[in-house]
Image (cartoon, rainbow, N blue to C red; front, side, top):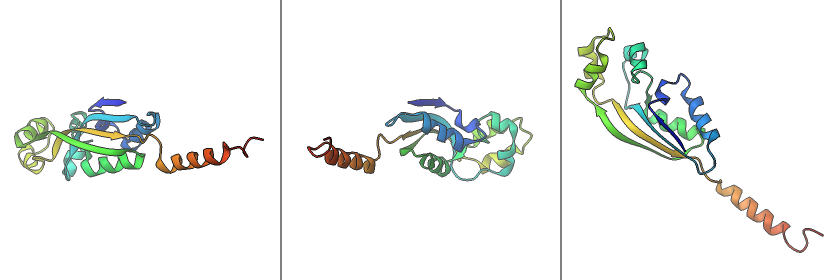
Length: 147
């Protein structure tokens, strides 16, 4: 199992992180992280702000993109469970001291930034491969196979 708490959003190469997570897991292994996720678009000023990168907001993946990157890496049973949605007051707090127009931007990102549990599974063995092994075993392990 791979577990993490608010780390994927800090990576500059998220597809690589998720591919590596898939690679190191054993078949049937699980990916279970808590992360900041975005629902919809964030204003470009927010995405470019280093204070907000450090604060885990600017680098957060959009929900559909997170699901797509996990699937592209090979994961199945992808689930995203929102545990907290950040409103205008929260947005105002994390925008403070960024040099951005807090009053205007807080309303633009109201409810778009969430904390979530993201879960996915590395398939145990692909079904077509199971059939191939079963077929090979049936044709090879008979009386005509090993003379």
